[in-house]
Amino acid sequence: MKEARAFCPSGISSFFQPVTLGSPPTSYESACRIGARGGGFILSKGVYTRARAKPNDAVMVHVTINGVPAPEARVTREVCSMLLDRVDTRYALIIDHRIEVPIGSGFGTSAAGAVSTALALSKAIGLHLTLNQIGQLAHVAEIRCATGLGTVSGVLRGGAILILEAGAPGFDYVDWLPVDPSYRIVAASFAPIPKGNILFSKSILAVVNEEAEKVMQQVQQDPDPALFLKLCYRFAEKAGFMTPRVRACIETALAAGALGASQNQIGEAFHALVERQKLDAVVSALEPLLKPRPAIVSQISRGGPH
Image (cartoon, rainbow, N blue to C red; front, side):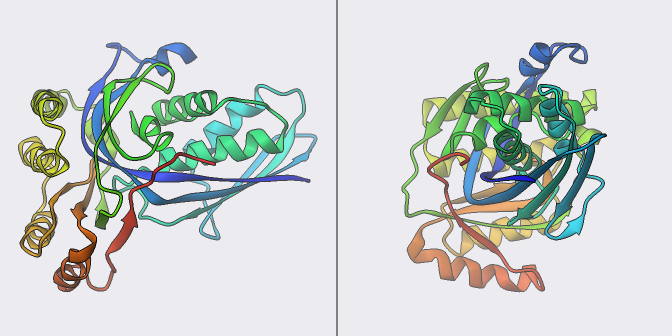
């Protein structure tokens, strides 16, 4: 049995603006041209993946997440299927994910899982792919499974990102917000928000597009991270995503000294940008609102998958 491992950072989307072709993609390349403009923060916490591959009479895929069988892991299975289409050998696969952040709440776990799966499995079965090719596979898997639109573009690079042109890596255009490396992200999740309900709602997307365009124009004029998060907070309010629990956490984090805070897109979750010397004060202030769950504290990733 051949084995390989990979890691991909997770990514929080602070705002997004879907870009589609007007109809479902009919080819791999058309799926690469669908995505989202937007921006957010790539975390040093993420998804560790181990891929094991054994030649077999029939293709079999077994996925676990944090030690528990995960038959619902559609994106991982889609990545495996696309990679196996590129080789002549049939394999029995075991894909084990260890995920350090909440799932389904705007932390980019599907993108990080897809990228780390593609990277680990391609090594295990002897496929030689560039990082952009890995990213394209992961992006197309997300599009096909309707789990995300643009997170792969961010997690492949790291930093505080601004996606100016949508699409898979190699088709997109990404810039960065200047952020002090000592800053930390403090975040927490209460519950997932089903993405399909939003990504396929024309009325919701009309508001999202209008508000996202305002954020994009202003942040390009002044790429200050604190202003960026203030604009993203307004975006979440206008789009109707904000819940009372998320609002209370954001207001508490700001009152305790956070530079800025907003809601994760898309999830009942929040994130705050905090100077290191104010980290304890912000985490302590949030603790009563988060019990029994602890706050997530992470550095901003300075690199992509490996």
